[in-house]
Image (cartoon, rainbow, N blue to C red):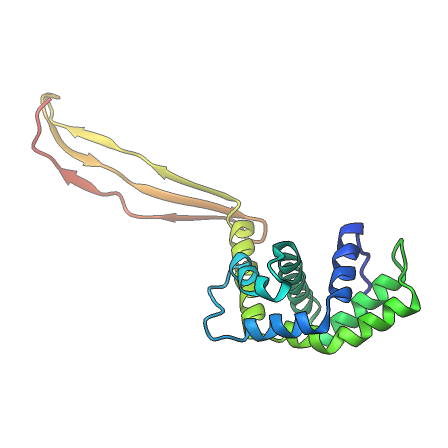
Length: 195
């Protein structure tokens, strides 16, 4: 059974924007993203690369990049190909609060080739993976704490500090594995100061 997606008003508006972009603009954006210097893998940088294709309209460039990155997330999550994701989104637009007309669906279908090409670009796939790693990192280490305990070691008569004892412990909890504790062995460092 093909997965179904329910689109919010904002998501539907973004899909409509993609549907209505001129083919020449999309082709130009794809060519700009194929440049060897298209990295680093940040959405803001990718948006700045395609802004010229949109005649300086940064909002349209952002919409294109963020939608492409979100579609790549769906591709990975659903183990689907770009054409399959575009078909799922088409079906979602048909059953949305404001269903697309036959003419609007036809315009979307004519964009499938260009949008599939966009979603297949290495720079889009790599940026989407980088974002997923960043989100997973914050998801996995939700309850991280670092404990340090610094204690002076005094002489028998408490007249001088002979050293400092300082163990360090990193405790991190995850939703997946529960609680993990990483510790180093206690260290001591001699000092020669007098109190």
